[in-house]
Length: 291
Image (cartoon, rainbow, N blue to C red; front, side, top):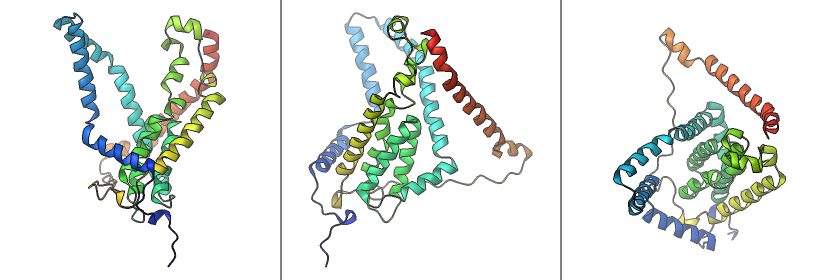
């Protein structure tokens, strides 16, 4: 009998990084609540501190209400980022690509590292697209019956784009604000001027930083992935990873032709793509003139 050990039949002796990851996972599962709890706690804490600092209840309520609605524009922007990312990631051509990518990894730990790599690369285009693509890819990998992959590690890997390099990509908030004159406070604008992408995310220093972060993140994803008896698959966790999409019902009314026909959507997509090209082609010149 051969004593060779493959990735699929690795023994249970975990490395230090894997043991640390499992300890952190256990701690998080036990003590970390949903994100809303942190937001609510922060709101209550700030309210208490405001009252302790001499603020009146009337001022507190008024400021809270006004500030809440001031976030409406930003909230809509974030919602649109996630929504458009979901639309692109769940389109039939992209779904086929995701399914093909899910078949590429040959072992459990390499599957986790691969999901992290794809999430990181896509995040350089758009963090919302990375968030959805990484999640769908993780679920597609988890559906494979020939691999026993830890679903927790897959989920963490799917979020690596949002957690590591998105700010060095095209959807970088800082880079976009610095390239938009109206978004820069006048006092700061006098000092820095307008900096287009060629002076921020497209510099060699920024791209080298992104490359280093990608390599380190993928390595951590690989070596921290549980193996052997420590693996908890989606099935073991009671998670349904089937992404069955129901086919639309047959068109029976003339009005439904407009709903199902892609011509109008393609027209809007062409206009959007034209606007993006126009922005990239004209903004650098305008910014240089404003600076």
